Image 1 (cartoon, rainbow, N blue to C red):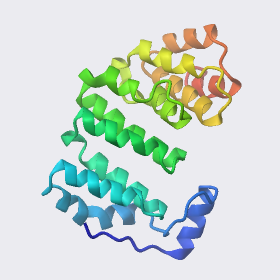
Image 2 (spheres, rainbow, N blue to C red; image 1 turned 30 degrees about the horizontal axis):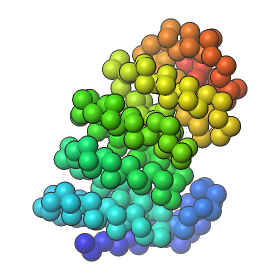
Image 3 (cartoon, rainbow, N blue to C red; image 1 turned 180 degrees about the vertical axis):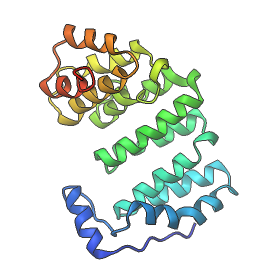
Image 4 (cartoon, rainbow, N blue to C red; image 1 turned 45 degrees about the vertical axis):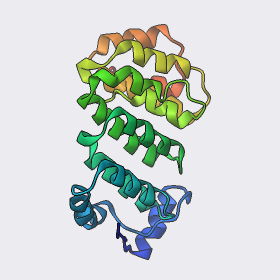
Length: 213
């Protein structure tokens, strides 16, 4: 695979600052990255899934942050071709170079896979639930954001309850996000849940956003 991104150093500084200087950036904005990736995505259609996974790993291990984004873009592009074993492989990237940007982008990939393979719901959820890495558990909490009326309330409840008292901003934010999103579909259930469980102020505030309008 031959693929390189060229960025703007001025953009790089601002992008790194936005991510609290946790990662080095090339300065490639999203639309520019998407345009640059078109030949790579087209080429990836002509190789086996195993080779695509190799490309994804190559990109993810590169130092500039935009390459992690490119790896996730490539994985998402092939979501219709993946099987559960591939989800197991791809789940490991949640714990690598972890921050909300990569974790939430990977969560979208797993959410799309879930929509395509609802029969794998329990196994997919189990990859993240009760994991020692809180970033993995963030995925378990937010895994069903796109499920709407197909949301498995039991799994959502299990994920939230496991981390109900976890003193971690990104976990409490995730709890609030999952409740807020589901309140668009089932506001009564969310309202009842929030009234009967001692949520953190952050989760309470985030989860009730649409309930108070």
